[in-house]
Image (cartoon, rainbow, N blue to C red; front, side, top):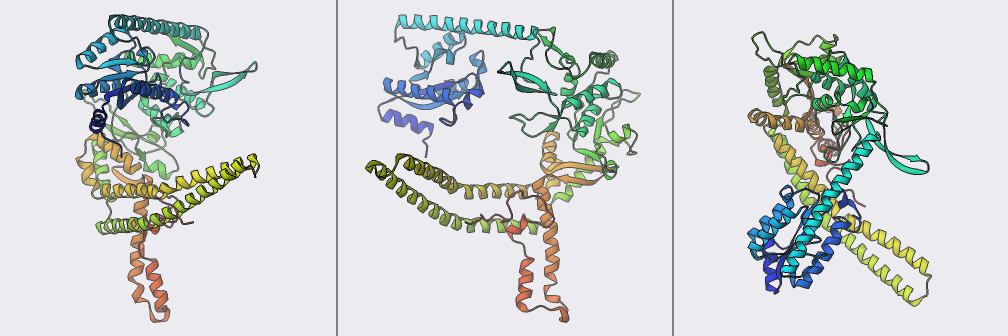
Length: 586
């Protein structure tokens, strides 16, 4: 097991080594992905780590902790990990060295360098730069100061160079940064060379143009436009932070409607230049939208993104039954006395195709609270499910031990075969190419076998944890929801439900998230099985089965864990496959 921080420091001191910390930094998170097949932290961090530990050995020191900073910042105060490093040094006075790859990795300007150097000196810690070792003494301090000044100058010149290049790119009509909504970053062949450029997104560009056209009619608020575009299928592009597709927010739509980029222009530092990208909207349509924005702003009716924790989750049941998808839009009209009133209204009503009346927001909230009572599972069913889960986990431990023993025997066989091939290579009795091919096949077989060692138990543990948490959330969801603040209610709605369908002030239907939909389907199926099981001993004489068949029939209707997630009529396998929690055997 890895040692704790205190034990690592103690171990270094016991070995007569000075404790040291290592600071590793890259300018962008993208650098962490370079050569990840060699080192999980990327080639740059791996290189810094290697030479940092080598320098520590030369100092008679031991690195007790590493601090990895995966991004750049102008000042030390903006670097979270570097601040953690300083706090760690202050909390552990035994630390003698702070090792960095280069001083420019730690400091972007001479002022930060001077401040940190003074702090370290007070703590008795020496800053060591692996690539810039000037020794000790006044001359070394002078050289380090001059180096910090030159690093500061170089950063300033690089910033000015980047600004000049961005200006030239903007003047030439190039797009700065990532492609905007409705466009894509692509690579094309230009005179035999691959270049980066911008192209229309065939999926989103027509919908973006539709958003401009709807808003230009002056009949759509941002709230109504947000709901309409969500129903039409306009989604934001997936990102690392938000991998799932999601509707475009009202604030993003509002920013888009005032961006000249969509009319074919590039803006840099307040100046507008003709762009080389294809415009999505005409200049005439752009001007119409700006007129609408200006009129609403002049009247003091600036488009606002109204907030309500139920926004986006409510849909009209009447439209749903008619084959339409229509969200309920949250709005706050102002009465004659200046008071705001919160309502939900169907988007279909605005379009003249639905007669659902306006619904007061506070009454809708109460209807959702009442509907949460339908989520709770019967206590006996939940208890039985937990017992089955624990029983399956206990059985799995035995199966896993046997499975691991079998895999371990297979690994030993692979070792023996590799040894024989190496002996043959040494004797020269077998062609080298054939030996290399067989060794390659054995290496692949070894990797697959080793990967199988932990996969079965890991998958089961994850599935059991999800099921356990889901059952806990279903113990008394209504009480939990009623007591929660608005921001927590929003998270609970997203955990339990995908949609609520309202008709007047009643939740007529809902779409649950997969795991909770499955559990309720299991509950319904299990209840039906219990009813059938209750009649096993009451079969009329003419239709009685043999005792063996009757017993088999009753057993088939009992609840087993594999049957929990292979429910008749269910199209999902949320937790496990057709084999249930039990792993498939060879």
